[in-house]
Length: 275
Ligand SMILES: Nc1ncnc2c1ncn2[C@@H]1O[C@H](COP(=O)(O)OP(=O)(O)O)[C@@H](O)[C@H]1O
Ligand SMILES: [Mg+2]
Image (cartoon, rainbow, N blue to C red):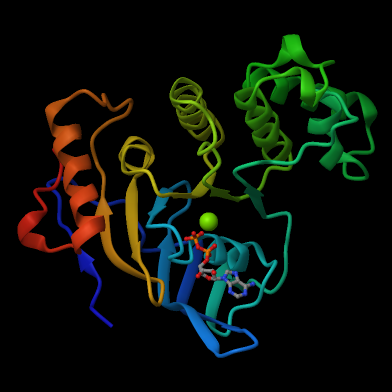
């Protein structure tokens, strides 16, 4: 296993001295009918409260498997995971997941979909309604509260998916290529919306993507994964202020280097950092 490369940029890295989410030596082996397949090997992650980490890697490197393990839906073969110093052993309300194609309930309206998770949680119906209104407004869907999922666009559906988990106030938001199926314009809108919600609500976010521009736009820090078996090969702090202009020479250079790195492996020599 190659040692993980940390690329040093000019500004200070996010403060991870007291992480809320810690993953140590996480390994996953799937036992198929033929032979066991190691999909993740020795994954280490330490996420600070309120940090936005992008996990960038090619298809098949184990990104979704990693998120499923962190969400508690599948068990790791070895290793440790802790949130607020407590072991993660099962799904919990402190972690919520948003997938690429989020299945909304097709027979419920936008507002009812967002309210769904609050059932049984908030006894006070008026307070629950106010909370739904707040999240409808946060994701810009107040005017669409009574629409059904089939009556709104893909981007709007992902807004509903986001509001539906954010209303549960998870500490950690796990996002698995949530905007990958949207067109370029809708994707950019969703990225801006996510940054604005993150600014207001201060979640810790682990955002999986295979898109270098998306990672460079969003992240405080990028964990680059490689495959066979899936491992983290580079850790890159991204310090420029947001919003980051995608047409700036520094941004374009950074993305090109990330792209080349994904294809040919990372080395400190070929990585100029940014800005
Ligand atoms: N339940 C499973 N059983 C066996 N192999 C699996 C299972 N889930 C995923 N894999 C394999 O693990 C590897 C990583 O998959 P995945 O986590 O979906 O990668 P990514 O999300 O990065 O594209 C792939 O080779 C995939 O075939
Ligand atoms: Mg995946």
